[in-house]
Image (tube, rainbow, N blue to C red; front, side, top):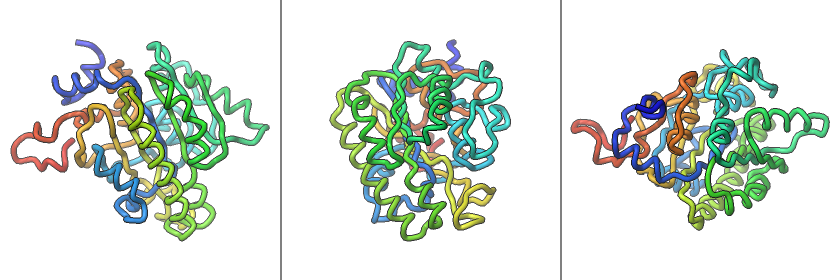
Amino acid sequence: MSEAMCRAGPGGVAGIAARARVQRVVLLVLDGLRADVVGDARFPHLEALRSRSAHTLTATTVQPSVTAAAMTSLLSGVPPSEHGIASDRFALPRDLHRLRPLPREVAEAGHATTGSVREVPWLLRGLARRIVKELGVTDAHFAPAEARELLRAAIPAIKRQRNGLIIMHWPDCDAEGHRSGWMSAPYLEAVSRMDGALGALMALLSQCEHETALIALADHGGGGTLPNGHDSLHPLDCTIPIFVHGSGVHAQELQHGHSLLDVPPTVLWALGLPVPHQWTGTPMTRAFEPVHSVAVGTSPRAVA
């Protein structure tokens, strides 16, 4: 039995078949998006994504619940205690040679890996490019820190890249949360702008011929302990939404207990690639199973 099947969890034959239809994964990080804004009528594209996806609004992020730690965990498959980034300052993870970064796993399998991330001050650009290169992102694009601009930078890859991984990080909500406070009027305006970009992304993906899975998630919430912060154990800071949408996915509400660390193995599993044994999370295989396959007595709207 392959390593991927050993780590796949309760996916079964249906899950394996569905996984094989995914040619590429678009991994979208909605930085600082609180789970409790999903379902608000002011954000129709978030609600459309929820209704059409396998999703959970009760997943958890890592500790500390800050962007650098969470993004490094998302790209390395392990918690901050193992990769060593335990603050909100980006750096190369310690013992990088021992880690198995997600983009590098995809690239070493012969697939393309593209990243669209915010511009950084020129003094830090060398470090930023080194970080993305060491993590295995073979084609990185830096753009202004707005969802629309970052989506624009990713459009060529969305239209032409036939396989592999496309990563986008949209910082709008986090930036406004720190400036004005989570759930403030400016924060909700940032959610609205990001919601519009999400609608444009979903429209683009619907026009593509490539079999694509979109996995969208927040890296953390905010406004739990401090109105302008998110580094705490408060549920509003630690709870995140995760959405799995697209090729082979069956719309359903996923059971409680998922975390940000389940996303990297889900990406590899969906692409038919083995999941490193060092990784902490488990593939979210239920997202690729028909709802009617759930055992009798289990709610079809809440499956693992």
